[in-house]
Length: 303
Image (tube, rainbow, N blue to C red; front, side):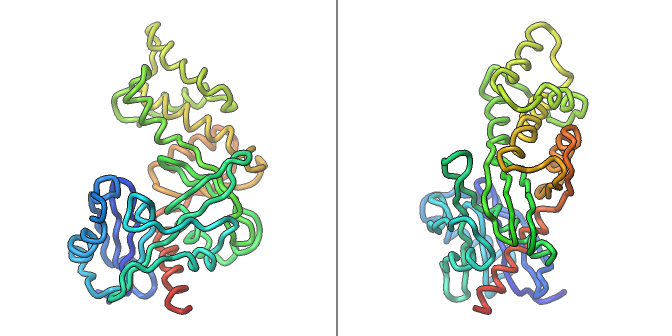
């Protein structure tokens, strides 16, 4: 087995994904821990990191770099957001060291102007975008759009290797709230393609979302509920996001979109983009976060 070079962690709200990487950034070991920041008491993150994550990964002597919500007010320590436009260098400048021997760093999030003059923020997605950029030198020049599906989906404009601006859509969280805590309650797994496609069709151009959502209730009330109400609701919400977000970032219909994230979630977004007639390519989010964390680590140790 190759020797470990780095302990890399993507520390989110509900869980931690951790990897031991070799010198080339390839994962030697991968584990997941139910230690998301929402499950930790104040001041507990550092203790759990040392006693559980480092120990379980066999990485007690390795340097470590962490991204995600661990740098928020709920995490280990607050790592201030960096301003957009931002690139590898400016994000690396905002990294905060939280341990000395061996060293451990936390990556900052980004803030910028989203819809209108309202602010927008991200934590964790910036590292995946950096990894996507680092994976192909061609992406250092020109304009690109990245869509990162998730609880809080991000649509980011990239120009000449810099994250210029981004917009967040609370599609995943809204789906969870509506299906569990509203009149649109929908049990079961959202995995039915036919019902999902019915939702995409009703999403239309994404406008008047509150009115379109009520179609799920109306159909159930008259005995015409879709085969999978959860899939219908998912298709409606994802379809509305895909129909409305590109125009907010001035994305032309012929401009390709990099769909970056969890493969299963990207599969549904790809279905929605195909329905909308958009061009896209799908990229693995885990590979991107590892590339991003390794790029930041190399920048830090060579500074």
